[in-house]
Image (cartoon, rainbow over all chains, first blue to last red; front, side):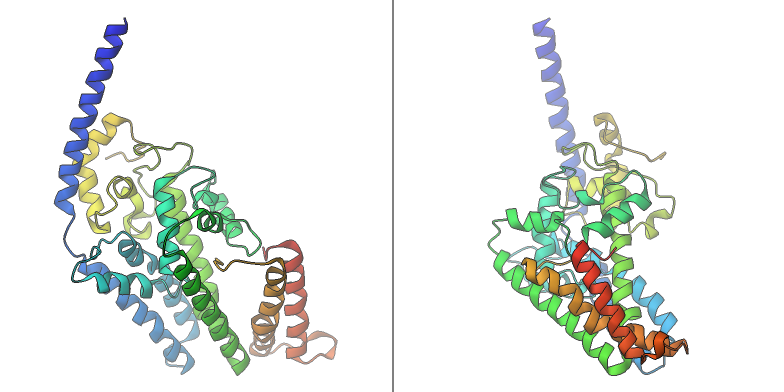
Length: 296
Length: 66
């Protein structure tokens, strides 16, 4: 009996190694190129958002249109920075590293999410996904998307002991002090801009171009990037903490997160390649029993 | 999302400051844009300040806006 168990365990371990090799070989095919589309997306989207200010303040663009475009723009601003956080645009020491850092820093300014803070906390999300104590995104857990949205809003309240603050408190990242300084500067700039605009007669524009769109975007991002791919957030472990899923609103509206499982397995694969990589490695993921709600 | 280390005093002052700095003019300008007059014969900005400070105090006591 004992010999049979040992033999079965050995077979399983051998199979696991073979699958890991095959998964890595597939992943390598999709890594390494510069995702120029994300560079254009990150920088272009930031310029678009900036241009909404003069266009709406001068009356060229109706405020309602500015509100819609700003909400869309801020919702889209996180993903290019996410690629930069994982050094997908350019690795450390490479010639285009400056571009990676530029996209990382600039693209999430409208979201008021400092790049270094995002990276320090995101690393902890990857290391501890779904851990109630250690995953900074665990506050987005909910049985339904609207519960997740409400829980996400609660984690952003100023008095909440939310996961990001706890994650930063635990971090020994050498860039932590710099990250705090940048966060303070960004936060201060945001409130100065809002205050200046508000007291110079443009409070409604400030509310509809930045304040409200940012809150809507943050909730949308929390639902599709944190809650949906990790729902029900019960299991931990490399092949258990993230799922493949079929979004009722489609791949684009769910920000490409249907294949987030591939991102957690191989974080250096660019967003646009996670779908093809998923379809190539799906048979192994299914054999492993990875969470999968996709019919295809 | 707030990332700056908070002290209890800063946490309490933040919402009230936000109420004065942003919500007050927002309320006042929203009233004017909707051609509504402030209650009790108040000027829109005075009503905005009362609302902003009031909401800020409530938020500071609760630890959250919503």
